[in-house]
Image (cartoon, rainbow, N blue to C red; front, side):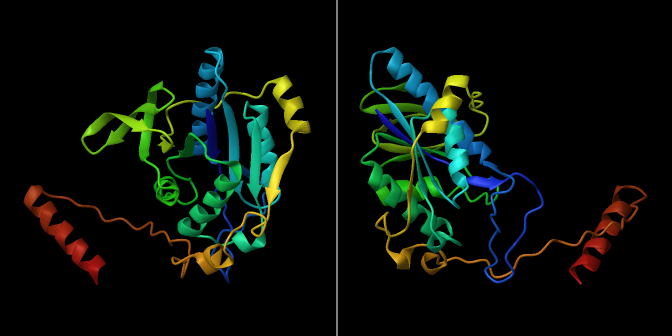
Length: 265
């Protein structure tokens, strides 16, 4: 079984800088960390790998990311924790991508890796919260998708059984492979790197592809390929003023209505 885990480097600090011209996050990699949801997806992939190999079956885990060159360090960290290989899509042409352009770039990377049996993503990225990449990637690859996965009771050669969050509660679903799964945050905790893993990661070869090497259409990546763009970004101004509401329930209701009318103005 071949598993691809999509990981994203996100700011490790709440102090995020925005580019005033492109209105995109400035990613200098200084305090970047693996998106917490993607870290969980990686642990799920590693547990599947452990189970398959314990049963005498072959299983590989490849981490895939689109980012600036220093993102390679995060991919090496993934290898130190148990992944087998890493692929980084890195090119200024990828910068400023929305979810659609990002999905297209990742699909180009997956095409270079062959046809995986399973693609795992975090449910969302903490710097965007769109939760769109997984479903869009499944659409781009033309394979089934299950989102908000909270457990994987069984994985066979042709099917993966998952528990997933739904509006009605938690549903158990059999998903035919190949498939894309997005993983909820509380499913697992990413294991620590072993000494052997750290040593292996130092010597591991991380494939780095430019947009051209990945075979990407320049019109479908970066800002050029992004139909949605941020028009304006700003820090909301706080208002510490408060209004004391007193009296019985009827009086309080009247006061609340007056406050709301004042806010509407």
